Image (cartoon, rainbow, N blue to C red; front, top):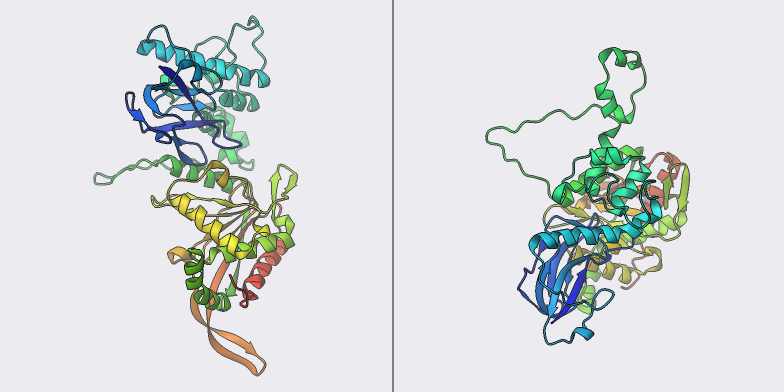
Length: 462
C-alpha cells in the first residue's frame, strides 16, 4: 500500500513551528478526504488540519504537546487501492519500508529527521563548531551533547549571545527535556536578574542610590491558596495574552485620552437599516464597521498614528489594517484584522467584520488573519462598561476603546439658543505610545474620530 507523509503545514508568513495540542485520529482509524486529523496551536491561533487524502492513519510521529518545525513529517497515512508510484507525498514518493520499526526506532528516527530538517535552516545563521568535520555534526545539536535544539531556539540564542554551555543548562519542558521556545523566552526574562541574586549584601550597598532599572523590578509576592480555594491552570491562550499585555506595558509609555461623542444620528440610522441589511444581505448591522470606517479615515488624515517604533526608527505603515478585539466563548480574547480598511465601503466592512467575528468564535481563523494590524479597536460597551483604559497591541502605537452607548441629558445648541435634550452618548478612550505620540497628536486624532462619527452621513443606503 502507498504511504502519504503528512507534514506540518505553514501556518502563516511569520510562523516557523506549531504545537500539536490534540490528535483527532488515532493509528488504525479510517480517514476520509478533508477529515480533521490534528489540532495545532501557534502563538497566534489554533487550527484543525484536514487530511488531503483518504486512507488509514498508520503512525503518529509526534505526541500531543510537541512543538514541530514547519515541513516536518508528523504522521504517516496508508492509502488503500493506490499504486505506490502514484502516491502523493510532501515532496517525493514514499517508499515501502522493509520492516515495521519498533517504538524506540520510531522515536530515534523522529529525532534524526528533526536534526536533518533543522541542519539546513540553522546553517544559514550559525557557523559549525571549529572541531566539527564537514558534513558530520548536525548544527541543530549541542557541540558536546545529544540534546536537540530547533532552528528557532538556536536563532534566539544567537541573538541573545547565549553560549552552548549556557543553553544546555536551561531546563526544558519538551519531550526528553527538549528546550522549547517558551522555555528560552522565560529564561531570558530572568537571565539578567540572576547575577544580582548571587552578590553579597556588601557588594550591593554602593549601588543602592542608583536609579532602578527594569531588570531590578521587585518580584511579585508569593501567593498561597487557601484550604477551600480552587487552583486553575491558565490555558495556553491566556498565558500568551498575559505575556503580551505585560510586554506591552514594559515596552510602551501609555497615556490615555478621553472624549464623549454624540451617537444619536448613528443609532437612529442603524435602527432604520438593520432590518433591511438582514433581509437583503443576510448580515447583521452592528456598530463595529462604523467605528472601523471612522478610524480608517482618521488614520489616513493622521498617518503618524499608523506607525510602529523599532528602537529609534519610526516605521510608517503603508496599509491601514484595523484589528478588532473579539471575545471568545471561553473568555479569552483574539484580534482579527480588517486589512486595507480604508479601501472598503460600509457594506464591505460589515460583511468582513461579521465573517471574522463568526470564525473567531468558531476557532476557524487563519494565522494571517490575526497578523499585520496597524491600529486596534476594542469595544468595552459590548459588556456594559461605559469607559476603559485599553493596553496597546504591540507593535502598534494606538488603540481606541469605545464604551456603552446610553441616553443622557445634554446641552444641545440650536439657532434659537441652548436647550437640554436627550441624546445617545458614548465615551471614547484612546491609549497611545507617548514615546512617539504626544498629547497634541493624540488629541487631534481623537477629535477627528469623534467628528467623523457625529457627522455620519445618515442619507446613505447600505
